[in-house]
Length: 290
Image 1: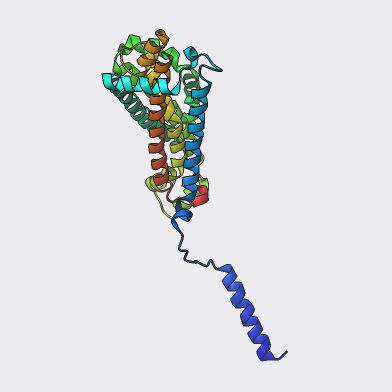
Image 2: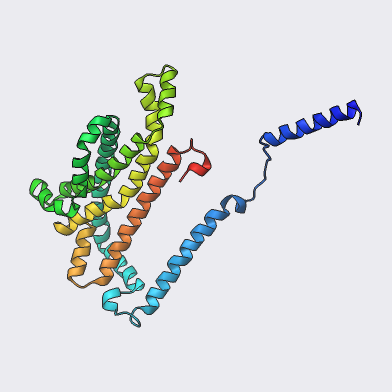
């Protein structure tokens, strides 16, 4: 092989290796199905699952199960319609929504702030950690009688109970997120002349968002649980009161109707936290997002 041919072969090989090493962006004209097909399949599967479950429930009630204990989907719909006409549904739902939103806001805010501050003070955190775990381990329903003595049976008691339930979940997850921040990133910022404020805002806070958002996701249903427990223990308003009143009157359809409303509220709150999660994690690679 001549020198010219060897040179051309070498250049071609180097050019090929260079192209392989580089990422090539190929524009794609994706169809609507390519963009949204996965979501359509998921939501379609969920819809089919719900329909099959409701049909099986409707057909089996009265045949395989006693209607007194299971009711029927159509009876539940009728009960919701009756409560809606009477104004009973919206007035009690609004009471519970206030308790859930206020309890979640106070509990999540104080839990995130406390977790961030205490986790930034490792020695102090180790001192108070056993006491925090002990308080977290207390059954929240056992605190309800004490809160009744302190705050009465009004809105305030349910808000405090929901806030306490949310606080520990958000606090513990935020603290874990702060404590698991990569020390190498912190050292790199300091080596570049960054001050403590730069470390907090540019490294610790963004890196701990995963723990905070995990705590928020877990805390959403528990804020609802805290509010409803307070209503079940002592209340004359709210969805928890509707459950208690329906159960006392052996109104199974009323109990299931209230559970449907509670499930809908929890789903909406989870979707809201999911939107916040996606916005906060836009900086992450796609495979790193939850």
